[in-house]
Every structure is written in structure tokens, then in C-alpha cells.
Image 1 (cartoon, rainbow, N blue to C red):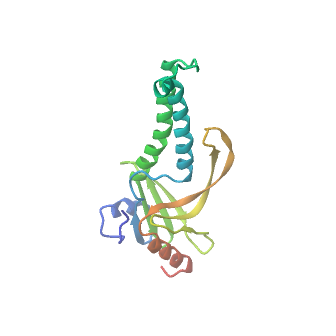
Image 2: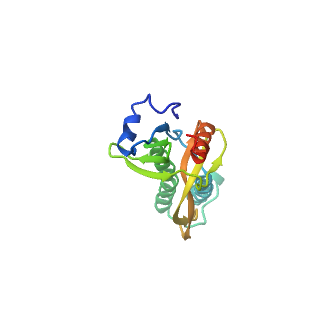
Image 3: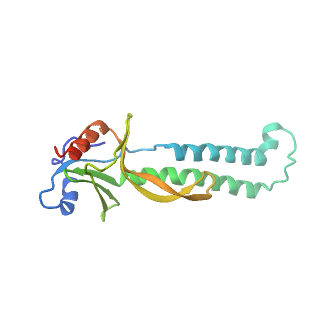
Length: 191
């Protein structure tokens, strides 16, 4: 999904109002689309499938095993719990996919820009310089973190376990190696 050049796309117009005098757009792109399950979503999926399977067995166990149900669990309530479980699984996965489809990335000779949203983009800017710690995670879809933000850490069960730091950067890049090389050139003052 990422674009190879900075200037030959209609998206280049998105970045112009945010560029400083003398600042040049070096690269722009976007995260890969579709459903992607990172570690957090995989844990949620595993827990959710187990949860739903237990309730399916409680509700429909007598039909599956052929023996009368001894759970005493009301079927109507069970179906509602199953529906809520499916929603609990599906909403974060779909939300992540929609958020990525509305996200754009740019790299200039001074900083990284992340735009999120539809017609009224919210743009956040992160300086890239010799002090910037870059965390490059290679792969078919690379992630490059260059900042951190503090956020609540939530367990799979939905309980908040405190606050911690999470990486901020470009996620699910098809051309991560190229972007990483550009960032290191910016850090050395060669961009």
C-alpha cells in the first residue's frame, strides 16, 4: 500500500499545510489494509473464542451430547451473552482495520507525520533527529516506532492493570526497509 515517491500522489496535497519553510516531503504511505491481528488482538481472540465456546456448550450442550442439561442456564440469557461475546471480539478487530484505512504517514527531512481521520485529518508530528530512538521491527509488514505515549494497559479480560508506555510510529509498512533507511539518513543529517 505504501507509495514509493513523495510527490506524485494526490495525497501529497494533504501534507503541504503542515510543512515548515524548507521542509521537504521524502516519503508518504499508509498502513496495509485488512484485518491484522497483533499480539493484543490475538490474546483477545483466544480468550473470546474460549468464552463463547463455554457458553455455546452451556446453552446447546444437551443438543450436542444428547443428555439433558444440568446447567440450569437460561437459553435466552445465554444467547445474549454469546452475542455480546462476538461483539466483544469483532468490534476491536474491525475498529483497528477502519482506523488503519483512514491513516496516512509522511516522512520529511525533519520529522514524521501521522494523519488520522476522514475529511478533517488530525495530524501529529514527531521530530526525527540524532537523539530519536528508532525501533525497527522487520517483517513482511514492518513497524517503525520513533516515539512513545503513555496509555492504560488493559488485560484481555477488560480490566485496567495500570499505565504504561506504548510505541508510536508507522505500522504495517510494506516498504519498511526503505522508510527505515530514510529515517537513519535524517538522523545523520543526510536527507
